[in-house]
Image 1 (cartoon, one colour):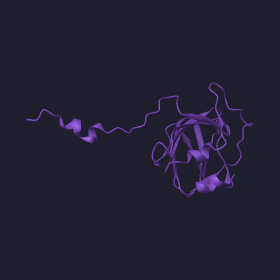
Image 2 (image 1 turned 135 degrees about the horizontal axis):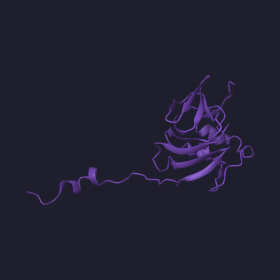
Image 3 (image 1 turned 90 degrees about the horizontal axis):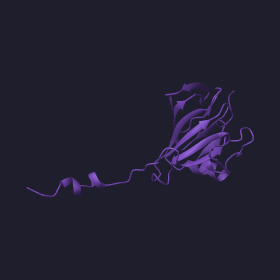
Image 4 (image 1 turned 45 degrees about the vertical axis):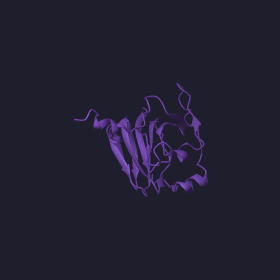
Length: 171
């Protein structure tokens, strides 16, 4: 009979490497009129994914675009968001999930009266560099200056590095 617990020496029981980001924490920035909080990015996940929370005010959301090297997925927590899927729109409400495979033109837009909340992520990771390029750090308790805040298009070098293109809106 062994006095040593085999679980103590088995790395499956002792290896640590999980990432925990408490509620309310993460780098928060205003991207156009939206508020994004980066929970984890490519650096922390060894390039596996980028994961963000977003608050999207009425009429908020990005221009239509395509990510040629990244998949993107969205989960609506509250409110309602209209998603562009190529040349058609889909309206997702709280609990709705929307997956965008790489190479698909998409965007989201809040067509409601109140801010919508969602989480979204990219695979592989690293896309946070493009999303947050030129963004304005958010100020706690302060709403983004809607309609006045504009970061323009991200730098061409980053758009090329992340194989992302801005495309026309079909509407």
